[in-house]
Each structure stands twice: as structure tokens, then as C-alpha cells.
Image (cartoon, rainbow, N blue to C red; front, top):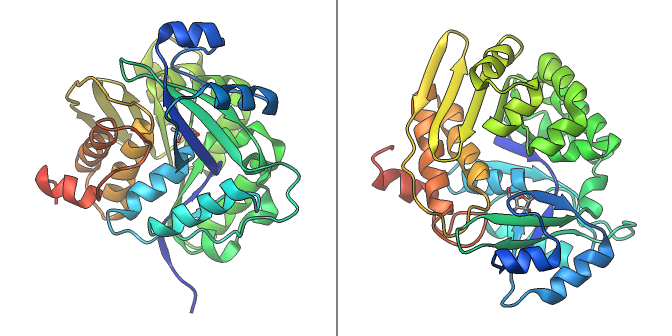
Length: 330
Ligand SMILES: OC[C@H]1O[C@H](O)[C@H](O)[C@@H]1O
């Protein structure tokens, strides 16, 4: 019998290698603080060698979301590509251990090795990501398992995959399968630079196929090339049912048709900000998938993000169901 999923994600399957580095280290190594920068293989090796006390963990933005949502009891799958190398096997095993199906087996003859991101966490908790896009970025329409995407109640796509043309066709195919099966499809805008690179295509995709979009304030401003966040969100709401905007330390704004929600956030200094947006999405999508209203879904997103920034690593260290119970959300 075909399995039905509450939530399926598609994104870059990336192994995170995490270490610490202060501002002078970042300067010396030519790393721009607080963003995701793409690097080549040679630089990946250089940065890897410069890392002290490395921690290795499965990462990737949407994969982090799906893993987080899995800890809330949703049935989840992640579609991504890894090579059949040590990191790829580590990645596939890590997803399975966290309870998320990873249907695409590691590829033996993949031309590029498994993707990895060298992440340096600063003393103020900011993270600077240096991503070598390997096999994960070669995900294409042939990698979309129609029986998974077509049986997803909610499908979540990662904007970063747009960096290769194959990612665009994969998204269109997956969204078609999901919508034909009656599911809802959404995207994370991923990063303001990614939005700059693909503005017109993102807008076309959102208008044509997306039921919801999640982004942070910088991404929304970049998408609509404005300084006025409310203008950007109002424009987005004319082409998309559910519009969500996070704004580090500021209230989250959510629009669904005529409904509006403003969800407060408690400011804390993060131990490691990696995955904050990803876990917000996990909590929010859990709320949506279980029929909560947009305000409660937003609160769930905030609670999930608040767990992940209290420790090193992009995924929850304990089930988010426990976090929600403690916060009185379930
Ligand atoms: O959002 C955080 C994630 O983005 C990058 O893709 C890293 O893999 C990290 O886990």
C-alpha cells in the first residue's frame, strides 16, 4: 500500500561540519559573517583543515525542517541526493535514525561528492556557512519520486535548489504531483542572495504553483526590491495564499487571505543560530498540518526555533513534542 506523508521536503542534502571562529578568524580566512557563501572543493578542503573540534551532522535547510517536524510525530520524507561515499552514507543513515524516510539511495556513480557546509559559529551565536555544493545540487526531476510527492499532504521546497536549472524542473514536477494528489506546496526563500539570483523565476513559481511561502524579512525585501516590509508582504499576499515572514528577534508576520497574525518572539542571545529559520518552519508546518490557526502555528514555529538556537547544530536535540508540551502549546 502506498504510504501517505504529512510533510515531504525537497532540498540540498548537506552534511554540516561545525566549528567555532571569532571575527578575526573569519577575517583572516576571508569568510563573510552571517551568510551562506558557495565555495569550491579546494576551499572546502582548506576550511575543513582549519576547523578545530569539528562536529559533523546531517544538515540542509529543508531537511532540517523535515527532521524537526518528524520529532513532532508527523510522517515525513525528504527527497535529496547524496553520493555513495562516507558522507553520503552518514547522511542517509542520519535521516533514517531521526525517523524521516530518505527514499533516494546514495548514488554510486554521482560525478560530485556529497555536499558539505563548513559552518563557523561566532561567540555571538551568528553562523557563517561555507557550502560546497556537490551531489545534492544535482537533484533533478528524475529524482522526484511521484509516489512520495504525490502522496504528501504538505510539500516544502528549498529555494537554494534553484541555483541549478535541474532544481527548477524538479520543483515544477514535484509541485504538480503534490497538487494533483490534493496536497499543498510551499517554498522557503532560503537566502536574500539566492532571491537576487532567481527573482523572476521565484515570482513565477510562487504565483503559479505555491500555496505558501516562508521567508525572513531580508528575503522578502529582496524579492520585491523594496525597503518596506509591509509593502512586500502585501504584494506577496496577492499571489499566494499563505505568506510568512520571520525577522530575527522581531515578531513573526503571517498573512492568510484576510487573516493577519503577529507572533511575539522572546529575544535571547543564541548559542548557535544555525537552523533557526528551518525549525521555525518545522513548528509552523506542524501547526498547519494539524489544523491549527495561523497564530498558533506561528507560536509553534517560534517555540521550535527557540529550542534549536540554544545549542550547537541545526536540528532539535530533543523532540519538539516535549518543547511544545512544556510551552503549553499541545
Ligand atoms: O539553514 C541551515 C542549513 O543551511 C545549510 O544548508 C546548512 O546545511 C545548514 O544546516
